[in-house]
Length: 200
Image (cartoon, rainbow, N blue to C red; front, side, top):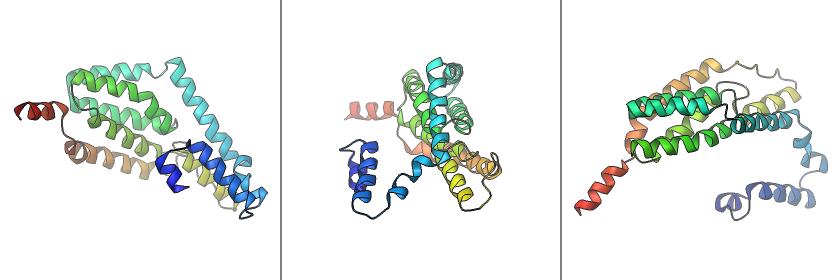
């Protein structure tokens, strides 16, 4: 399973279904255990979050954020970086973080061309800020929803919507500061690489 997930020789969803079928046929898990995930209310919630994210993407409701980000990019790279991470993190707290990255990916690539910098200097902060924002609320990531549902099944009080927002915000701020102060500087600028290759 790990080999197939890493190499992606088969689609990830197909691999997951094959693993479940193999475990069922070999008797390692019971049929009830094999399909237990589909009967969990958290599965429906996660699916609903993807529908919400797709709706925001198709209707263009997030285009205003793209325009705002482009304007910030014209002024300064560092301003654009901070604005992007705050916007992505804030949206990821209430919309599935995977969908937020998919929405902002073309915007960020366009901004990197506009600023004439390496796309990796923006893509890494994009990815990490979505994860930082996702841990701020219950619905930020599908993992939070699933853990809360499992806890409720075993008699433990489920998580509240903003129960770990305080700690999540601390991680969010620390993560942004780290990406700005250290992480981004480790990625070379494409223009510098081109100038260096011309010298040689």
